[in-house]
Amino acid sequence: MEEINHVAVLDFGSQYTQLIVRRVRELGCFAKLYQPENLAEIGKPGAIILSGGPSSTSDEDAPDIDFDLLKSYDVPVLGVCYGMQLLNIKFGGSVKSSKHREYGQAGLFPVVSEGLYAGISAESQVWMSHSDTVDHLADNCKIIAKNQHGTPVSLQWGETFYGIQFHPEVTHSHEGTQILKNFLNTCGELAEFKIEDFKQELIEGIQAKCGNKQVVCGVSGGVDSTVLAVLLNESGVNVQAIYVDQGLMRKNETAEVEANFKRMGVPITVVDASERFLTALAGEADPEKKRKIIGNMFIDVFWDAVGNAEMLAQGTLYPDVIESASNENSKASTIKTHHNRVDRILEMQKEGKVLEPLAELFKDEVRELGATMGIAQDILNRHPFPGPGLAVRCPGDLTKEKLDIIRDCDAIFIEELKASGWYEKTWQAYAGLIPVKTVGVKGDERSYEFATNLRAVISEDAMTADWVDLPTPLLRKVSSRILNEVDGINRVLYDISSKPPASIEWE
Ligand code: XMP
Image (cartoon, rainbow, N blue to C red; front, top):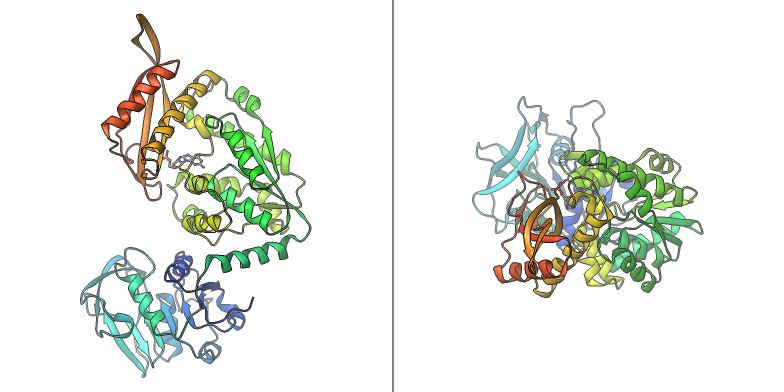
């Protein structure tokens, strides 16, 4: 598909480059990422954006750009951070290294009120991350915004070349999206971003890479792997979904996942490894050891099932790619990435046998893509569920009896959340087990049973979370149902701990 009038984003290595692409797409324009050395292969763009990057323009091997070629496209160009410094040099100015790195919030004071800064506040906040700054300005350059110290942070060369020192793509730049929009407004008509077109592009990529080969993909029933499997199936490639039942899934989950895949016409193999997992976990109470047993066994079981695959597809998303690199604290993404990057997978990757078609997308885009393929909303809007499953919701050693109790409590809690409209308003919710027996009275009899903890949180990225203030009548109903319907529980507690210091899961 030839790209016409799209926004070509040239990647100079910033971890936020994909976020620029995403913001442009959010503004309704089709954007695509390219490496600067492939400048000749960007089709007929309507605008070009040069991203930021970790290098200094004075580095010996600093990434460069073919400036004559860039100019020959004759379209508006925006340089962000490194991109701005590079443009300033290309126009004949210079850049100087600074001793201190400017990192974090800064003031933005536009000098002009049209073009990039139309409708932008006289004093705004932006986010910076750089150490080099522009020094001499080229002859045709004018300053269009400064920071709180009067230093130029935004330049314009001629009529159509712009530069900004800050990162408009991050939310900490309060009016960043408007500045990007203003830039796009200076361009002629740009190609529209439609998820269907994007899907078509993904399908063509999958077909080109897979041909007639058999493609396997691990599925969990979650959004990412389901969308991936359905997309592969729609591409007409020979796909086989593999689902490993570790015995740590929620009530009826395995059967539901299998039924969903069958309904969607995607071939699925369910590997029942529950005995194997529970036997290996028996008597182990240490959280880290439990995780290790589960992680290693999952890889072994999965590998037994897919070892001979000609191609392996993974539902890696863009945040998995960047967060794991930049954020050691993000347990979910590090662990997912860990799974997606074990040695054997890295080997397959070298042989060109790994396919990650969703790696450019963010979660909400994956949901949108899934909706275009008819995947049910209740699958697309499912809460996240951890890889080690119920094991992290059952402190101490695991038994089938304890897991069954969790399953029953959880099913009631989730059912009531859905019935009351609170499921959609929470980011993640579950019932876990507190493996401490306490005394109670059931009927006329003394009981000595476990307690369950209900947890419902809101979060943006799982890094921080707050508990949800669920209405008392709802909690009362859930508690009453659990106490009446679940054998083995005589106490229901509601977890009112934020993260930090608590975590979302109990282990
Ligand atoms: P915590 O408990 O660390 O959880 O606050 C943050 C988010 O990560 C999920 N989680 C995991 N996801 N493998 C996963 O795929 C794991 O080992 C794992 N541990 C926690 C958790 O459900 C929450 O959404």
